[in-house]
Image 1 (cartoon, rainbow, N blue to C red):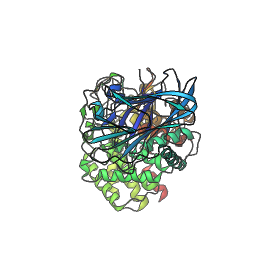
Image 2 (image 1 turned 45 degrees about the vertical axis):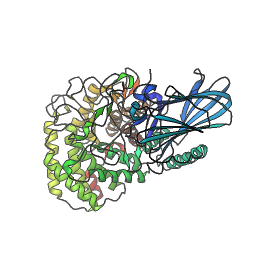
Image 3 (image 1 turned 135 degrees about the vertical axis):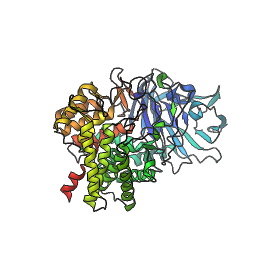
Image 4 (image 1 turned 90 degrees about the vertical axis):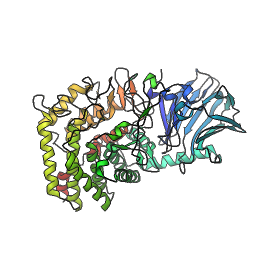
Length: 605
């Protein structure tokens, strides 16, 4: 049975593809991350679209790796007669009118027989396109989408399938160039695939060389940074949470969501990962995307947006797809876009404050927007909401949501104090202190000596780890230490942290889920803050072992089934890894949004 960790990622900062260990592209959406899939076997089988390129001998030994410092994936096939490497990459396009996937078969030793099987199935496996043979390849057309496959290999089209077998000699390159373009336009010229490979390799090596991280985990941090770059939609600067939809949080379950959108929640942590690593251009583009997406009335602020800031992300199901491992339904869109989540206000304000701290000039318009947002927050922070985890049960007074409302006012006060910005500081301080008192009074369970997930509840939530990380209370406060102990006792298993206990059904969803990898990195950060550096280091090294052989992390992990779960690869997991690596390396601590607000401002003024 397929496993999520069997896949590698290639991309071009417009879209991305997942390539299996055996050399099959089973997921590809063009021309954007959120477009309909051309290959959707990931959520079904090869009948829903796939492109296999492998050794003809199914007993061939298979090895794979990324070229160091790049997003170029190499899959090597070895037999007694020879060896060849399939080199997969996507060149950055000039615009959205053309997208390419290039697969080069390079002969490495002797002669090896290769085979390819291609099933074009557009619109997530629903449409069988019209195929037309050309002198060197085929065209596939359905509605607005056209795909051209160029190759010198003779292709055979029958039974709605394209196939070929061919031999590769040592030193020889055999190209396959897949080009998407709008069906009403003429196809673009075919470029030199080998030359494109060299240019793409130079691009990625130059990009990776800009990283300022110097520490004991250079390779894993570099791979996480490259992955984060691959999840960036360069035309707008937005960053998708993952390039996939509906990979299950529990195998066979229904907790399957579309993550091909941009979450405000990820903003601050992502900014830290880019800014502390020397990628100011990416950080500025992300900050500017945030400002555009949040523009308008603060009451209309959403938790997530489309790639260009689109607001309507209506959710529907694709009934013809059985889902990964039979995990249905397969969803497109995400109904959580309409939820009230108070934490988003704190994330947005916190990200703008973080940008100022790291030298990204804050415009007058940005400060004006932030001021309007906190005025709205002052009116609504008392309300219940759906919380950070986008539950689909009843709204509640989540402690993390109130905490991030506190962060919004604290960071506004800090920005005004440090940078001489105008605002009603005394009123903001009064509201901030009111929120602080409210959390301590209603969100702390004295009997259990822990903060709880929501007011009146008794259970804990991994998001409570942000209490010391954002400076709400010092890490040696007895209430913080009690909360960490409760989280360890109730949510920690085999060095992996669950988000919360799903048994009571408060989230309105059936079934269970795996351990949430980002939360486990947050626990590392809290250990470090609490002076438990040996525990932090041990846990961090343990977590690195859950990445696949290419260094990629999904959203969750199943310690019982020993497999990755959830959408893949997950930006939140890789961002958390980067920030924790900085913390444990003793660097300027980007970890877990520890911009200490007004206390920091007092030291600087």
